Image (cartoon, rainbow, N blue to C red; front, side):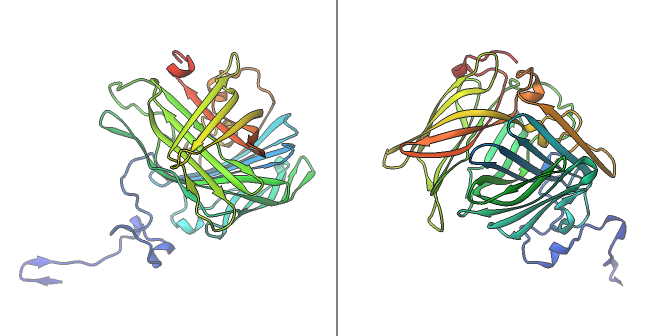
Length: 377
């Protein structure tokens, strides 16, 4: 229309569509369509993570599915360990779909939200790689929101994300090399997280002049007991000063999670590794009552199996319109301090007073950390 010297136009540029089916729901947090991220940072991501383990530790599995909207990439991995002897990982990577409603499936790996914050289904169907599964995660209680993660290097934002963590039981089956393993909720528990925001993904980029030291110290321990769960994490600088910490005791059912006032831990590293030989965690509530969780690692699940630090299947790496591949290796690995082996989840026996349980201690220790007597890379 033309009126009084002003040209006004209403149009849809179909070469740059950003609308999706979710824009039909009242869920917007800004004036932008749902598909548009808060910034154009290429490190923006949106991720699912799940793990599960039998009470006797004979089966351990994990799933990751991530979307990287500003890279136009999505990827997923399913990894399983049977009897602690071999880790087998299926990976897939693809161009991200324009509609977020289609973003929960990457090749043969799919994550279905059956009931938000309560039930999720994991489907894997790759007979050509001899790996299939149909698993359902059912929550034991509501999710907990961890404190916001925010770290900068100079003026550049490195971490800026939110994560929820939730505990539950698994049912279904996993088939590997033609052998089916039934998964029963009475014997198989686990945890999940959902996180979104900004953190380093994809191929390393030139970020200019170095700022600070190359260092990262991370412990994360969700643990399942018979009638409750516990949660703990810390991020620390090389000095031992913390920039993030979490502590919760989570009863089954609808009761509110009990957030801790403070967490204290003692970790002894195994000789020749950056992995814990043992770990003791004090969860200190607001009345100064102390609940101590003792963790004894049984074996290590390597996070490279679900894409973390994987040189061939790393998160947010462009591998074409659709790529699917399989990796497998014997356990324990020969070189624990190889960079690809640093990031692990150790499956652990757990005790808290008279209570016994099972859970994981995730560890990623890069660079110096004075309290652990770690120096250099």
